[in-house]
Length: 602
Image 1 (tube, one colour):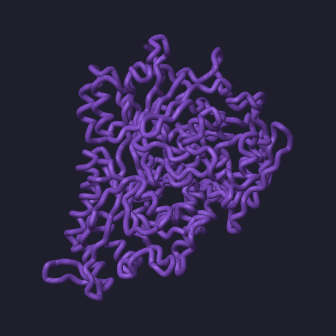
Image 2 (cartoon, one colour; image 1 turned 45 degrees about the vertical axis):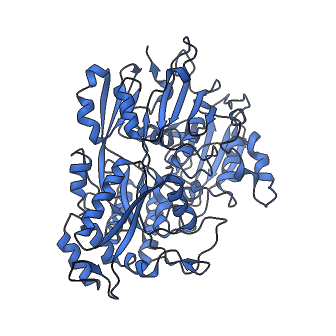
Image 3 (spheres, helix red, strand yellow; image 1 turned 120 degrees about the vertical axis):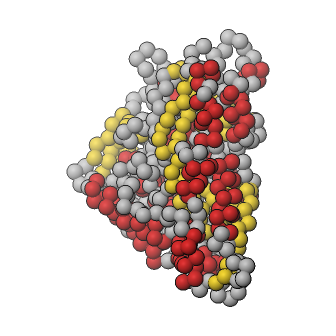
């Protein structure tokens, strides 16, 4: 998972931008989950010129926090990077095949340890400056591999037991050599990482500010004039108005073309910053929106309006993302203060307690009620569509009596009011948080409160503002239980930074990020190490069937140890106006995987 995209469950368009245009990265962050949909905006604000071609307008719940994709820690910021930067490769959303992007081709040595990429001729940045192998060499060696720069991409690129990084070397203006310490099956997928401009950014990693930090860390903030940010993808940044909108315009030097015309066909893309997905629905029904992600609660209503509204609802099947709750298992302290109340930490780190909570949540009821039957319980961190999904998982079917039995075996007991107490007489209660504004997650949180009350556990559920929640998760590390989501894909190793105990997204037992105060007393359990080792083994193995067996073992171990309690997975539907052509709906990429090739027909 790339960066901190674990914070979000975003719509297919931004998922696609991260997956298809940036390869197998996830922007991890994972990352709180927010909704992203396509919407139209006020014609008065965007169509002052009646002769101007109509824009495609998207809606996002939160604005970007930075325009620097290397250090971004939220999905919107990472997706800005996906809109304006390309990688060496990209992924076909139908077949998951890795295809050329900035690279024209590549060759792999017989021992699978040396890969040479050859760039397309004549590549340029949006300012007209040549894009060459210098940029690739600079991006990897000076940015992704730079220990002074916090980047989730570095975790994904670490290889084998040694966690060594590939060696990257420019051969000539068009060729770059990657040398691996051992065979690494996911390598071509990771080569979709954004390539950034050396001619703009080199000085920012060669100089420091007054506090001794690299200038790069404060480069390309949201206050940066858009013309200072160059692009290589279909669009470049035109403007950003805080809390209102982000506007992109076509990149005149974009490398992809059709037979007769340069791409993209749509000149402008606008991301309107809107606070509520309910507002998206109202605007779509009134005819002002181009497209909307169809949540289960809206499906029946919109299905009846397809013909009148001149739109089509596409079915992508089970969504590639996951939704879960997780407890903070971190036993560490900072400045003498435990991150988690030691009383509660004892509960959270008790395996039978976590298993009991899993049995105590009625996930089928979530699928039936919250998802209106358009979903199903989820058992794995790997999407059910992935060839690596393990069919042998048993899951945790709702069984409150089994939950109570496990709790008693773990030393818990009930008082005469059927409230759960630990072995020291403490009432068992914990706080559960999620990002406010996500109706589905808020409904899940409310059900969890009711479900766990039936086995005597008191849950204090509080949706929090995005900034508050992300600060707790990535900075203070002081939280008890959260309800979040991960984006997903076919390749398990894209989540390696979640399962590596020292990974930047190992959120249930998070190591402090570079520059943060250290922790005292953080412990890593043997099962965490074992899962991390399985991911190393799975990435090293080149035989597909053997890789499947390794990831099956990892899934079974995660199911047993329940660091994440997976909830329910909804089906993905997208409604798109029929004047947007030509839509090829993909379960991995949604409606807009080929955004640069789409046209708006008036």
